[in-house]
Length: 240
Image 1 (cartoon, rainbow, N blue to C red):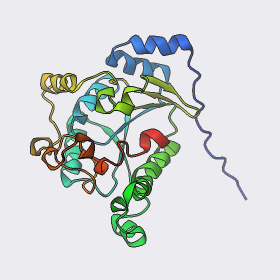
Image 2 (image 1 turned 90 degrees about the vertical axis):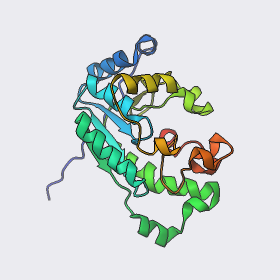
Image 3 (image 1 turned 60 degrees about the horizontal axis):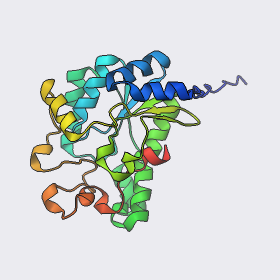
């Protein structure tokens, strides 16, 4: 029997304190340039095609047009999100890598019921199935040394505590636009004639899965726009 050796996992490049400090001082564009120069062929980006995603995707692809872009098609996205994904993929020439949960929505609901209605624990399980596991699989297959994400500190209290560059065991993680405000994003979109998500005009200012997302006029507290206010994160930036 011929045994095929599994592809070795990428070793996280040990970053010096000096390198960490230098990256923090750079502009978002220069942070991305540093990433692709420091980890050639070993950088991936993730997107959810959310409300203002066009800005970050445009910024990144101006620096590295062939950068692999991971998108988790959960099966629960708004149809408008999938249309937006197609529009931006064509317009920006994205090197899109789409991953899906192992179970379809009908299979999830047949086996587990409506998990998102079963309190924080049910919602946690739901996110494990539709987001966390597919992303873990994507990162295992693509084996990057650096993961780039568009998180911004102004979007939640927990994200305000994040660092621009995070060293993890299996990979480093870069947040190039961490300091950007909503105004910064809006100005970038306007400057480059880029669109907001089509649901933005209908009052959806934070857009996730259709079963856990509400319009601004449907809530009394902005914390309830996503996940019924039970949690802020869907799990991928906490568990992956």
